[in-house]
Image 1 (cartoon, helix red, strand yellow):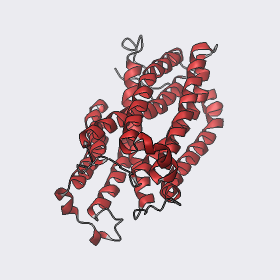
Image 2: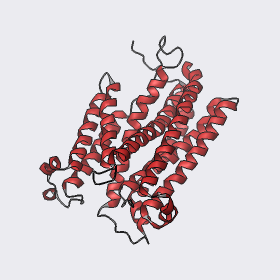
Image 3: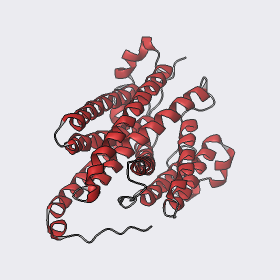
Image 4: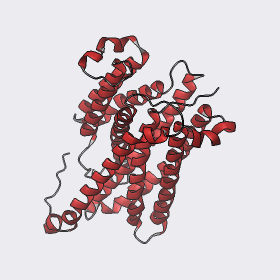
Length: 341
């Protein structure tokens, strides 16, 4: 059964959507610019005064990794929330409209960022000055190179799946990206690398579901507003909020365990201010604390307000904070890890 969106009425053409469209576009551009600057300038700012050496092109690497994480969040979040929407009462009898997918564009951005990261690996983990510095054949000879190629190919397949008639199949290439990132973050020279990779796997999966899911849920609610599906909006947001509680618990637990593996309890306070990795981690913890407070606020409005959809206001602020947290996560990957066994 194919559903078509009814033509917009006068209120849709000239009403609130048109008046607020420019404001939303400006807000999105500002958020993207702030996130990009955070990624580009974050490594230098975090390393200032620590005595640690900055890797060449750390800002560019952080930016590419931020784009990759954001692309992963968008693709995973769409799959997650669309599945929640199909589980709502009455969805089988009358499938509801869903917003146009951003997954093909996100997968394209993920492909370009993964390609850039693969080029850095092929140049010996240095920013290539020209094409001659890139040893494409050498990618197959190293673990990092193989993982980089896996991410490039996985985003290509994810984009094709997203544009197909069965977009749900992109879950497999996206899972490959998550696995590759988890393995890349924990080289074989690390103590118990599989344990660290497992923690990162759960952490990254839950973070993508949380951030990308909230973004797509708000897009769905905006589409349903003023339509027959509007009554299901509060139910969708409530269902997402219940799952988000579990996601937050998993993110917190894996984040704490990962931090303690790299910064033992007796040194963690010193490293949070004295090392670049610790400073970036502290910034991420503060952002997650803000996100948690906003999530609690949204949940209270959802359960107690006369209009549950007023919870969208703190939820939008939560998306902004999550976007900055994604950028800080990109910065973390470009900083020296203070491993002390």
